[in-house]
Length: 307
Image (cartoon, rainbow, N blue to C red; front, side, top):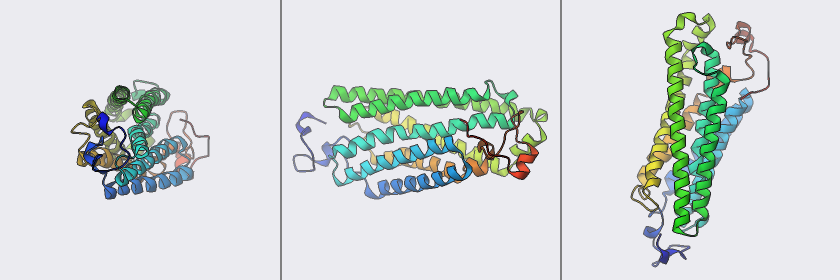
């Protein structure tokens, strides 16, 4: 925004909507829809998390949904007043960081997939996946959060640009992390499915399960949605504040809102508690990393949730 609009707090003839950072009044219907979907998924994820005791997955998903809800509240405030600093600050900070929580939920599953199908096919010890990728995700979250906060509180263009650069760095790091994760996951599944003859009968049964295949499909869909969204955000922020991409609401709705909604809905509909119970502490994992026949038939014993 130019200096002559620095004192604008509401839409007037001297402070038109077109002079705002986004250049438009956020669509009420679209943003209310996204808010409602994320709020609904938040409630469902809480219920599912307590029912199946998938604590770490629940924390990641609910934090993501809650942050999305706050972000879309900010955009609704900007519908009422496109110059609303509170609305802008809420949405730029929250919508930037929210997908990092969903990617964390995806990362959490790989350890359990490795333990279930066979750790001998993994390049890394199963427990390393959680620490490596959650650590990388936290770094991405810090960079994006710091960037969003800096941009939201900036009193000058130079400070706002610093915030933008931090956000871009955080999102680029998130994309790199996603790519490395995909490479390791693809390598593991290729090795596991190519050499299925050395797997236990129980592991073979699990991998042929329709529920398990649906869960894997949900992970892929969520992963692709998050990746597309991140690439879009890099392009949006790289052009500077108020650029053509940033001022295209239709692209934001599809490439930000819809992509993340699809990912969250699939991870909610195909929750691991039901579709991949090996993630639930209600199912006891045997020393070889596979649920015992007793666990499958009787439901296993309760154990403390582990990351």
